Image 1: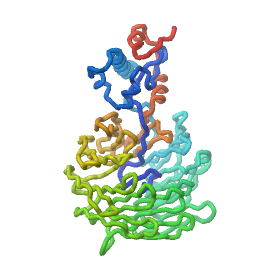
Image 2 (image 1 turned 180 degrees about the vertical axis):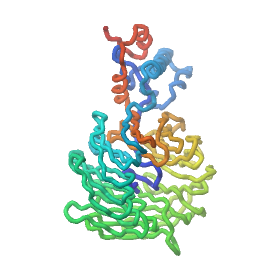
Image 3 (image 1 turned 135 degrees about the horizontal axis):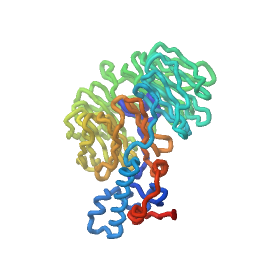
Image 4 (image 1 turned 30 degrees about the horizontal axis):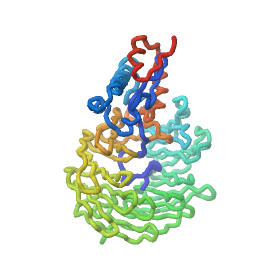
Amino acid sequence: MRSLSGSTPMRHLLPLSGWVAAPFLITAFLAGCSELRFYGQAAAGQAGILLARRPIAAVQDDPATPPELRTRLAALEALREFAGRELLLPVGSAYRDFAGHSAGISQIAFSAGGRWMATASYDWQVRVWDMASGRSAYTLTGHQGAVYGVAFSGDPIAPLLATSGRDGTLRLWYGDLAGGVAGYDLQSPVAGVSFSSTGQAAYGLKDGRVVLDSSEAEDIVLPAHTRGVTGLAFDERGDRLVSAGADAQAVLIDAATGAVLLTVTHGDDFPVEIEAVDLSADGRWIATGGRDGVVRVWDAGNGAAAARLETAERRVNAVAFNPDGQRLAAGTVSGSVFVWEWATGQTLYKLEEHFSSVNDVAFSLDGARLATADDDGLILLWDLETGELAFEIQAHSGQVYGLEFTGAALVSVGSDRAVKFWEVSTGEETLTIGGAPAAGSALSLSPDGRTLAVAGGDGVVRFYPLDSGDLAEAVDGAIHRPLTEAECERFRLAGAICAEP
């Protein structure tokens, strides 16, 4: 389903939200001596190394590596060291900080066009940042307590910004954003906001109500649940909304009229609180996992129960469909992981290598591997052709909160304040971003996939480049002197062209 804090798919609620990442390059190159620039694939053979995701050290140590390439790689490694030591340039670290809040940041959101970034904070304020200048354009005040949620609508020209806070109000900010109005006083904390593909907004409240924004009539306030709303998800066309609540129910709603189309209840003889939920990629099936240790699959067309899958555990923490929707994985509080062909009820695998609670499960994009993460900081990668353990990664020094596959990489977030990228085919770590937020902070990716924004408990948003073009800009701004003749000669092997003084 989708998290209440935005439009990023989530299988269950986690302290961190919103993950999609882009392919990234982690090597730096020289092209010009008086102007030091980083860019990808400058040295012969480097493109092949990046595509193969082989560590440069392994290529250098390989006897089959041509001497010329080995020399070039040594020069590139020296260049990276020089950039970090002499020029104090970012090598695997933040290159841009946005500081302004006096307390921790609860959430980050980018506008559709990427021009604006909004930050919600425990200091009762929302700040809107101009991404071109890096400056705070607006400080939005009005919430009488911590601001928990912030989301932009999909209109890149005139974005609508919605914020929600502990004071139980939802505020909508229009036009130049500074002229915001308090759209509702709902007398209940707003758990979050979700926008459909058409720009319609839905709000879930902790008292169980769902609010549907209507541009042509009065907004619809629907008493969808008897307890707090735990999740919202629009379908791909934006004409239907699924709301999940702590009352063990999932409700399908007509987004235009607010009419309840169907309601399903997790439980047998009595309702059982839902801990995890997922939608199949085609939107036809809903999976719920509850405190009874049972996973249920529902037909999203008519609400009929399609499958009941037993784990014999006391609680299911995470569920996920594979990309074609035919397999379903679940992680439990005892550490067991189940993989089913859910339509037949056949248990394909019961995976029992975890010794603490499994917090998340995720299928690779091709469905060939399953990643599972636990409270002990362990990530396991499973080969789903054989059911065998492919790699064991001691990823974090504390709990692993979330996993997400992004192409050839797996991204993990932990309570140790680290965000890590892993190569799926080898299990090797390719990048660690330090200084990431503690539990309860937020992460977000820019719309173009080039920059990762990480909100810290210190009230600072740090930007990490995932694209070598952004590194080039960061490096250009750090040059305060021309390179010496010796430096030019040293780095000429890396593909440098020394400009005439």
